[in-house]
Length: 94
Image (cartoon, rainbow, N blue to C red):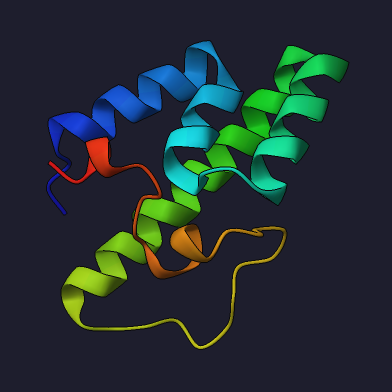
């Protein structure tokens, strides 16, 4: 799969400030709350969660482009946008 520049920017934002990357990918909801709490408790737990949300999103986006759809939802992901591979923020749809 070819990553777009927007994917790379979201990954960098997720690495430097995990809740911001999760907010762009998943929108407001349970995922951003979990990311904020984990980042508040320590940067590393927030980073792990942010990278996990990013990885699920990229995987689901690749499946969507290939015409496949996973049969089960990803565990610990509350956002429907991430589950189907679509970003919640319009700016990533470049």
